[in-house]
Image 1 (spheres, one colour):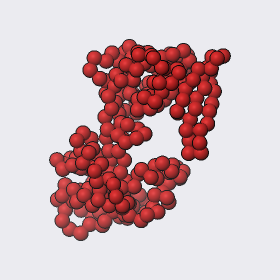
Image 2 (cartoon, one colour):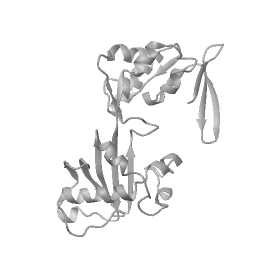
Image 3 (cartoon, one colour):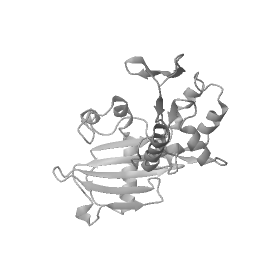
Image 4 (cartoon, rainbow, N blue to C red):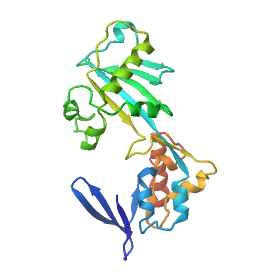
Length: 260
C-alpha cells in the first residue's frame, strides 16, 4: 500500500503498488493486518499525518530479526547413523540445527541447517550474496504445501548462495562430529526476516511502553481504521499473538463472536 486517503463521504481510498502497476480500492472500514515495518510510509499519508500518538504507537515496539537456512537431500543421512529427528545446539554461527522428517514416498529429507538471530544475522547475511546453490531452475519448479506456485518475489529471495551453503554444511558436519562421506544437499534456502519487506521476524515492547493502552488504541486509531498484528499483542513473537490480536479486534470493534 502506497497511499491512504479519507473519502469526503466517509470511508477511505487505498492505493496499492503491484507488479502490474498501481491499483486503487475504496472501503467504508479498513483492517490493516500489516507489521510495523509497513507503517513508516503511511505515517505521512493524509489519514495519519501529524498524528503524534499514532507515530509513538508505531515506534513502541522494536524489531527482532531471525533467519533460517534449510538444506534438502535426496536421502536421509541421519537415520542410518542412529540420529533421530531432533535438535542440535552449537556455539558455531549456525546456532541451532534441526533434523526434520523424511518423505515417506520419495525418501527426500529436510534439514534446518541454521536457525539464528542477533549478531549472527550479519554473519550469514554477508555470505548470502553471489551465485545460487544447486540447479538454477529448482526454485521455478518448486511448489507450496498445497501444490501452489511460489510467488515470484519469493523465488528471488529464497535460494541460498554457494558460499552460504558451503559454510553452513561445514558447520553441520562439525556439530554432528561426522567426518565420513555424507550425501551433499541438492537444494537450499535462506530466509532472513529482517530483510525487506518484513523488517523483522517478531517484535518486543520497547522500554516505557504501555501495552494495554497501545493495544486498545491501535484497534481503531482513527474512526473506521483498524489495526491488528502480532507486534501489538499480548503474545509477541508467536502466531498466537497475531490470532489473538485479530480476534480481539473483531470482538471489540465488530461485535463478532470470539474464535480464539
